[in-house]
Length: 283
Length: 274
Image 1: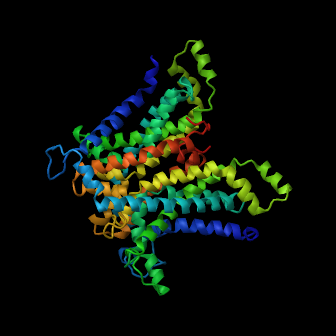
Image 2: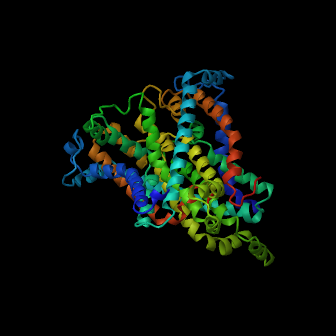
Image 3: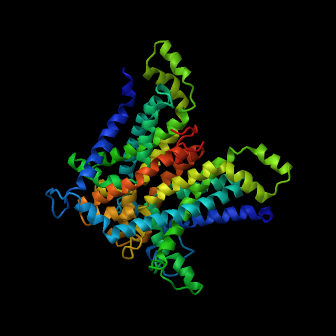
């Protein structure tokens, strides 16, 4: 049997899921296709112009980037701190690890539902507790909703950042630490001059993975606020989803997708070089 | 950092854990309350468990159907992912040297597909499946999930096979046995652990996937997350039934996750962290 048969799943999948959809996605962007207007009418670059001048698109892009950067930084820092804390025996360590996996495993959509219950203004636990201490605030009000979503993302994904960095700390060369201690280096000094530099690739891995994931956030926010109030919490995913499947503007959605893809593509090799080569060779 | 000694360290760690688990515990407790207690404006802490909520969610709430569909979709797609991922990772690490251009290109393509947000594929995928008359069918959503399973499987298997000695394959070729035999007799026996882990991670990924499932399924083919979030509008948000449905839909995944703790870090980072 020829060699290429080993790669046939790739060829098949590439054809079905990559080549054709990419072709169709880009092509659709040049047509005025929508549910209201199902005839395909060539409109050239009109869709791209419409999307790029749509304040909703630009606001979604801005919100997505700000949200993603904020949660990524906080989660990585918290995860690193936690990994340092846990990197020593304490009672119930095994149970701790087991339980920590639970938030990562719960479907984000379900987590959204869960938060809707917890934060519900009438029957939720959190507003009830806040009321007893005299704080009668609506958590979904425009001035608190963004912070709220950031907080919820941190709650769900810090364990993920933690797990990556804890795994990294496990393979940490302990003899280096011992040598430093013998030389009389203080704890902060060890953290800054030894642990941080050695852990740098792992920290980058956590940062990149969280960033990639945060940039595509859809489930929790869609279930929780559906992008509102107004369009305040509309991420890029929600924007494209709504354009295509609520307004039925397939042409516009395809154009927006193409633009986002073109913006993101240059960053991928960066990701590849940083973390995807466990053997450490750049190519 | 001296204050972190003694009892303070475990205390901090457990506080963090409590913060992460509190919402889930509240979900479980609500699922056992009566409607009146679930709707109470002041939190109810003491109550007799209402197991009937689970029966309601299972029967009238359609969770029995959603669980069956999710099980089918997740099993089929993750098995497909592992079956396609193993030979592909073998090709890219053993047949072609890891340093070769071809190997690098395939890996880059797969990382590209893993990195780009799935939303970008939603419109074209919807139209492609629609044209193939697979939209709103179990087969359609299984295909999409299988695609993501192959990406995950490839990256995990690649990370395990990168260090696998290529001499074994060369010796096999000298002895005149073909690539598939080498794969089956020499490589796969060494991949049993990772294969199991990949299977479970792909199962979890498919089980929890929401975006594609939301668009590509209808009332008769809804997967668990779509079904559960559907409670929000369909039943006028019956919180006790909704939360019971949520617990039903999450329990199998949590059990699966605990089975593969060992491989979690490697799987979650697509093999990027050993």
